[in-house]
Image (tube, rainbow, N blue to C red; front, side, top):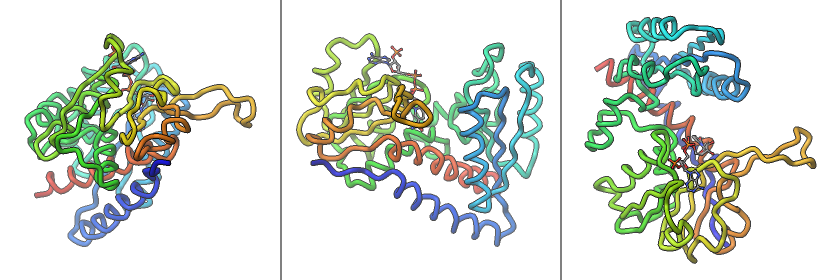
Length: 291
Ligand code: NDP
């Protein structure tokens, strides 16, 4: 039976690190500040924004939640971002994804001051990640996955890592982090056009599943002793649950757990790490902007 990588516990430890850093910064007269902008009333986004704000408040980070109506124009949103760029109380800015369809998310991200881009989505930060320039911001979810691998003592050097998914939010940055000097994994990135995905996965010492397809990765895709990081968060109907659904990852947890060396559960794996790494990025932004 595999070792369960407890994302909740690791995230709690990261947040405690943040708490002491915030206390130290505040004693030096710097209060880190994070602004989260939400356009529209998507219920899942509201939950995410709420928990980001609560985590900030709990740690002593100044948090500003800006909720804009669904019909906000792109120009209006960009104006809000520009105001936040100029606001010295704000060190981190994020615009909750996905915005309403009439908004060009890329264009909005480009207007965020890259020094405040704590999501790490601005082209300047994407380039810094590729260049292995540590002054940039790494997207929170893959940064969280790297931290989980480290805390679970997983050797990445020379390991065959397969990342399933090539999004700018998870898959692509994850691959860059794994192949970076110091991590030194041999990385394969798979996607919806990959041939023989099960065969590719069977080569992997480390599997990172970031697809958005419930329980796609089954036991026969995973070699004995592999480490499996499940990024997926999928809602599947479940009449036995009061709310009518349950959350599941991209990995068929029970059967894969029975043969791999270590695995992250869903929920309680990568999910809690994302917010913890967001807090880390906010503190980094505050330090860099204040120095
Ligand atoms: P995207 O939809 O942006 O990307 C999904 C990727 O999976 C794409 O590259 C796509 O390929 C690939 N894919 C889709 N179907 C298949 C298939 N059948 N075989 C192989 N590859 C496939 O999703 P995200 O990267 O944003 O998110 C992925 C998952 O992670 C989702 O479940 C999401 O909810 C979750 N997530 C969790 C977070 C957390 O905090 N734990 C944070 C962010 C995301 P192609 O490029 O060819 O279309």
